[in-house]
Amino acid sequence: MVTRDSAWPAGTPCWVDLSVDDIPKAKAFYGGLFGWDVQEGPPETGGYAMCMLKDKAAAGIGPKQGGEAQPTAWTTYIASDDADETAAKIKAAGGTVISEPFDVMDVGRMAVAMDPGGAVFGVWQARAHTGAGIANEPGSYTWNENMSRAYEANKDFYSSVFGYQINDIGAEGMDYSTMDLNGQMVGGIGAIGADQPAEMPAAWVTYFNVDNADASVATAQQLGGSVIAPPFDTPYGRMAVLADDQGGVFALMQNPSEG
Image 1 (cartoon, helix red, strand yellow):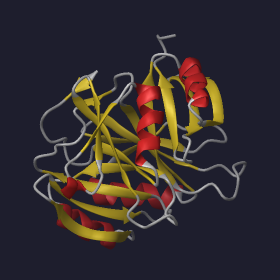
Image 2: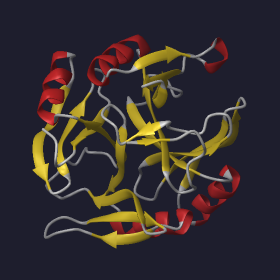
Image 3: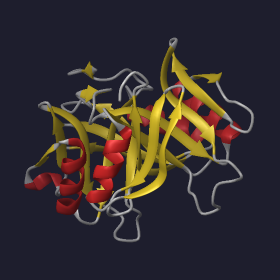
Image 4: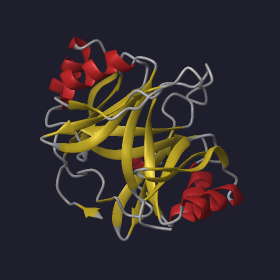
Protein backbone atom coordinates (compact mmCIF):
# COMPACT_ATOMS: atom_id res chain seq x y z
CA MET A 1 0.00 0.00 0.00
CA VAL A 2 1.07 3.55 -0.74
CA THR A 3 -0.31 6.48 1.24
CA ARG A 4 0.71 10.03 0.54
CA ASP A 5 -0.11 13.58 1.63
CA SER A 6 2.37 15.49 -0.52
CA ALA A 7 2.60 16.10 -4.26
CA TRP A 8 3.57 13.13 -6.40
CA PRO A 9 6.87 13.36 -8.32
CA ALA A 10 6.58 14.98 -11.74
CA GLY A 11 5.86 12.38 -14.42
CA THR A 12 3.99 10.04 -12.06
CA PRO A 13 0.32 9.20 -12.65
CA CYS A 14 -1.08 10.99 -9.61
CA TRP A 15 -4.87 10.99 -9.93
CA VAL A 16 -7.76 9.39 -11.77
CA ASP A 17 -11.30 10.58 -12.21
CA LEU A 18 -14.47 9.54 -13.99
CA SER A 19 -16.64 11.79 -16.16
CA VAL A 20 -20.27 10.64 -16.23
CA ASP A 21 -23.82 11.74 -17.00
CA ASP A 22 -25.31 10.36 -13.78
CA ILE A 23 -23.15 10.95 -10.70
CA PRO A 24 -25.49 9.30 -8.15
CA LYS A 25 -25.56 6.18 -10.33
CA ALA A 26 -21.75 6.15 -10.50
CA LYS A 27 -21.53 6.64 -6.73
CA ALA A 28 -23.73 3.58 -6.19
CA PHE A 29 -21.77 1.43 -8.66
CA TYR A 30 -18.26 2.22 -7.43
CA GLY A 31 -19.26 2.47 -3.80
CA GLY A 32 -20.67 -1.04 -4.09
CA LEU A 33 -17.66 -2.36 -5.97
CA PHE A 34 -14.75 -0.74 -4.12
CA GLY A 35 -16.30 0.36 -0.83
CA TRP A 36 -15.72 4.04 -1.55
CA ASP A 37 -17.28 6.72 0.61
CA VAL A 38 -18.19 9.17 -2.16
CA GLN A 39 -18.36 12.73 -0.84
CA GLU A 40 -19.81 15.52 -2.96
CA GLY A 41 -17.88 18.76 -2.89
CA PRO A 42 -19.25 22.27 -2.22
CA PRO A 43 -21.36 24.02 -4.91
CA GLU A 44 -18.34 25.74 -6.45
CA THR A 45 -16.93 22.32 -7.46
CA GLY A 46 -19.79 21.84 -9.92
CA GLY A 47 -20.88 18.47 -8.58
CA TYR A 48 -17.40 16.95 -8.42
CA ALA A 49 -17.17 14.23 -5.77
CA MET A 50 -14.19 12.75 -3.94
CA CYS A 51 -14.07 8.97 -3.53
CA MET A 52 -12.61 8.22 -0.13
CA LEU A 53 -10.99 4.95 0.95
CA LYS A 54 -9.75 4.62 4.52
CA ASP A 55 -10.27 8.38 4.87
CA LYS A 56 -7.94 9.12 1.96
CA ALA A 57 -8.77 10.34 -1.53
CA ALA A 58 -8.66 7.44 -4.01
CA ALA A 59 -10.35 8.92 -7.10
CA GLY A 60 -12.84 11.51 -8.32
CA ILE A 61 -16.23 11.42 -10.04
CA GLY A 62 -17.51 14.46 -11.89
CA PRO A 63 -19.96 15.58 -14.57
CA LYS A 64 -18.98 15.52 -18.22
CA GLN A 65 -17.66 18.88 -19.32
CA GLY A 66 -18.43 18.34 -23.00
CA GLY A 67 -22.07 17.30 -22.68
CA GLU A 68 -23.62 13.93 -23.41
CA ALA A 69 -21.61 13.55 -26.63
CA GLN A 70 -18.50 13.08 -24.50
CA PRO A 71 -17.97 9.41 -23.63
CA THR A 72 -18.11 8.18 -20.07
CA ALA A 73 -14.43 7.71 -19.31
CA TRP A 74 -11.73 7.45 -16.69
CA THR A 75 -8.94 10.00 -17.06
CA THR A 76 -5.38 9.54 -15.82
CA TYR A 77 -3.61 12.69 -14.61
CA ILE A 78 0.18 12.93 -14.74
CA ALA A 79 1.93 15.04 -12.13
CA SER A 80 3.75 18.18 -13.21
CA ASP A 81 5.74 20.80 -11.34
CA ASP A 82 4.63 23.38 -13.94
CA ALA A 83 1.50 22.68 -15.99
CA ASP A 84 2.20 25.54 -18.41
CA GLU A 85 5.68 24.25 -19.16
CA THR A 86 4.34 20.71 -19.63
CA ALA A 87 1.64 22.00 -22.01
CA ALA A 88 4.33 23.66 -24.10
CA LYS A 89 6.30 20.39 -24.22
CA ILE A 90 3.17 18.50 -25.28
CA LYS A 91 2.71 20.81 -28.27
CA ALA A 92 6.39 20.68 -29.19
CA ALA A 93 6.33 16.86 -29.12
CA GLY A 94 3.36 16.56 -31.46
CA GLY A 95 0.52 16.29 -28.97
CA THR A 96 -2.60 18.42 -28.73
CA VAL A 97 -3.59 20.54 -25.75
CA ILE A 98 -7.39 20.27 -25.53
CA SER A 99 -7.75 22.51 -22.48
CA GLU A 100 -4.99 25.04 -21.87
CA PRO A 101 -3.69 25.18 -18.27
CA PHE A 102 -6.17 26.70 -15.84
CA ASP A 103 -6.50 27.07 -12.09
CA VAL A 104 -8.95 24.83 -10.25
CA MET A 105 -9.77 27.14 -7.34
CA ASP A 106 -6.91 26.71 -4.84
CA VAL A 107 -6.54 22.96 -5.32
CA GLY A 108 -4.27 22.87 -8.36
CA ARG A 109 -3.58 23.86 -11.94
CA MET A 110 -4.45 21.47 -14.73
CA ALA A 111 -4.52 20.90 -18.47
CA VAL A 112 -6.11 18.26 -20.68
CA ALA A 113 -4.20 16.90 -23.65
CA MET A 114 -4.19 14.23 -26.34
CA ASP A 115 -1.13 12.26 -27.41
CA PRO A 116 -0.25 11.48 -31.07
CA GLY A 117 -2.12 8.18 -30.80
CA GLY A 118 -5.37 9.85 -29.75
CA ALA A 119 -5.41 9.01 -26.02
CA VAL A 120 -6.60 11.78 -23.70
CA PHE A 121 -4.86 12.46 -20.38
CA GLY A 122 -4.66 15.18 -17.78
CA VAL A 123 -1.76 17.16 -16.37
CA TRP A 124 -1.94 18.06 -12.68
CA GLN A 125 0.14 20.67 -10.86
CA ALA A 126 -0.70 20.11 -7.21
CA ARG A 127 -1.62 22.77 -4.71
CA ALA A 128 -4.15 22.00 -1.96
CA HIS A 129 -5.09 18.74 -3.71
CA THR A 130 -1.91 16.72 -4.02
CA GLY A 131 -3.50 13.81 -5.90
CA ALA A 132 -4.30 10.33 -4.68
CA GLY A 133 -3.79 9.83 -0.97
CA ILE A 134 -3.85 6.05 -1.33
CA ALA A 135 -2.72 3.65 -4.07
CA ASN A 136 -1.86 -0.04 -4.54
CA GLU A 137 -4.49 -0.96 -1.96
CA PRO A 138 -7.69 -2.92 -2.76
CA GLY A 139 -10.15 -0.31 -3.99
CA SER A 140 -7.49 2.15 -5.21
CA TYR A 141 -5.66 2.48 -8.50
CA THR A 142 -2.53 0.42 -8.91
CA TRP A 143 -1.46 0.79 -12.57
CA ASN A 144 -2.01 3.14 -15.50
CA GLU A 145 -1.21 2.27 -19.09
CA ASN A 146 -1.39 3.99 -22.44
CA MET A 147 -2.79 1.85 -25.28
CA SER A 148 -2.92 3.07 -28.87
CA ARG A 149 -2.23 2.22 -32.50
CA ALA A 150 0.70 4.66 -32.49
CA TYR A 151 3.02 2.72 -30.21
CA GLU A 152 6.35 4.02 -31.53
CA ALA A 153 5.16 7.61 -31.83
CA ASN A 154 3.68 7.56 -28.34
CA LYS A 155 6.87 6.15 -26.82
CA ASP A 156 8.79 9.06 -28.30
CA PHE A 157 6.10 11.54 -27.23
CA TYR A 158 5.94 10.52 -23.56
CA SER A 159 9.72 10.22 -23.30
CA SER A 160 10.09 13.73 -24.65
CA VAL A 161 7.38 15.32 -22.48
CA PHE A 162 7.92 13.53 -19.16
CA GLY A 163 11.46 12.14 -19.43
CA TYR A 164 10.46 8.49 -19.24
CA GLN A 165 12.92 5.72 -19.91
CA ILE A 166 11.17 3.07 -22.03
CA ASN A 167 11.80 -0.54 -21.02
CA ASP A 168 10.53 -3.14 -23.50
CA ILE A 169 8.86 -6.12 -21.80
CA GLY A 170 6.79 -7.26 -24.76
CA ALA A 171 6.50 -10.75 -26.17
CA GLU A 172 5.74 -12.25 -29.56
CA GLY A 173 2.60 -10.62 -30.87
CA MET A 174 2.50 -8.04 -28.06
CA ASP A 175 4.22 -4.65 -28.11
CA TYR A 176 4.46 -3.37 -24.54
CA SER A 177 6.94 -1.40 -22.44
CA THR A 178 7.11 0.10 -19.00
CA MET A 179 7.66 3.82 -18.57
CA ASP A 180 10.30 4.34 -15.91
CA LEU A 181 11.50 7.36 -13.95
CA ASN A 182 14.76 7.16 -12.04
CA GLY A 183 14.66 3.38 -12.22
CA GLN A 184 11.06 3.10 -10.97
CA MET A 185 8.17 1.85 -13.09
CA VAL A 186 5.43 4.48 -13.14
CA GLY A 187 3.24 3.24 -15.99
CA GLY A 188 2.92 1.12 -19.08
CA ILE A 189 2.61 1.78 -22.80
CA GLY A 190 1.43 -0.68 -25.41
CA ALA A 191 0.00 -1.24 -28.86
CA ILE A 192 -3.62 -2.09 -29.55
CA GLY A 193 -3.33 -5.36 -31.47
CA ALA A 194 -4.66 -5.96 -34.97
CA ASP A 195 -6.99 -8.57 -33.47
CA GLN A 196 -8.84 -5.91 -31.47
CA PRO A 197 -12.03 -4.26 -32.78
CA ALA A 198 -11.41 -1.32 -35.10
CA GLU A 199 -13.65 0.86 -32.93
CA MET A 200 -11.51 0.34 -29.81
CA PRO A 201 -10.23 3.83 -28.98
CA ALA A 202 -6.77 4.81 -27.82
CA ALA A 203 -6.88 5.41 -24.09
CA TRP A 204 -5.13 5.58 -20.77
CA VAL A 205 -6.48 2.57 -18.86
CA THR A 206 -6.82 2.66 -15.05
CA TYR A 207 -6.27 -0.58 -13.13
CA PHE A 208 -7.77 -0.87 -9.66
CA ASN A 209 -6.31 -3.29 -7.13
CA VAL A 210 -8.68 -5.95 -5.76
CA ASP A 211 -8.35 -8.87 -3.37
CA ASN A 212 -10.10 -11.29 -5.73
CA ALA A 213 -10.59 -10.50 -9.41
CA ASP A 214 -13.25 -13.14 -10.00
CA ALA A 215 -15.34 -12.03 -7.03
CA SER A 216 -15.03 -8.37 -8.05
CA VAL A 217 -16.15 -9.16 -11.60
CA ALA A 218 -19.21 -10.95 -10.21
CA THR A 219 -19.98 -7.96 -7.98
CA ALA A 220 -19.59 -5.54 -10.90
CA GLN A 221 -22.07 -7.57 -12.93
CA GLN A 222 -24.56 -7.60 -10.07
CA LEU A 223 -24.25 -3.80 -9.95
CA GLY A 224 -25.06 -3.52 -13.66
CA GLY A 225 -21.56 -3.53 -15.15
CA SER A 226 -20.40 -5.66 -18.08
CA VAL A 227 -17.35 -7.79 -18.79
CA ILE A 228 -15.05 -6.84 -21.66
CA ALA A 229 -12.30 -9.34 -20.80
CA PRO A 230 -13.04 -12.01 -18.17
CA PRO A 231 -10.40 -12.71 -15.50
CA PHE A 232 -7.11 -14.01 -16.89
CA ASP A 233 -3.75 -14.81 -15.34
CA THR A 234 -0.53 -12.94 -16.11
CA PRO A 235 2.91 -12.95 -14.48
CA TYR A 236 1.88 -9.68 -12.80
CA GLY A 237 -1.41 -10.90 -11.34
CA ARG A 238 -4.92 -11.89 -12.31
CA MET A 239 -6.65 -9.22 -14.38
CA ALA A 240 -10.00 -8.37 -15.96
CA VAL A 241 -11.42 -5.51 -18.02
CA LEU A 242 -14.89 -4.18 -17.27
CA ALA A 243 -17.33 -1.43 -18.17
CA ASP A 244 -19.43 0.20 -15.49
CA ASP A 245 -23.20 0.65 -15.81
CA GLN A 246 -22.68 3.88 -17.80
CA GLY A 247 -20.03 2.48 -20.16
CA GLY A 248 -16.86 3.66 -18.43
CA VAL A 249 -14.04 1.18 -19.07
CA PHE A 250 -11.55 0.21 -16.37
CA ALA A 251 -9.48 -2.79 -15.35
CA LEU A 252 -8.90 -4.87 -12.23
CA MET A 253 -5.64 -6.32 -10.97
CA GLN A 254 -5.27 -8.94 -8.25
CA ASN A 255 -1.75 -9.37 -6.89
CA PRO A 256 -0.12 -12.69 -7.86
CA SER A 257 0.07 -13.90 -4.23
CA GLU A 258 -3.59 -13.22 -3.46
CA GLY A 259 -6.82 -15.14 -4.06
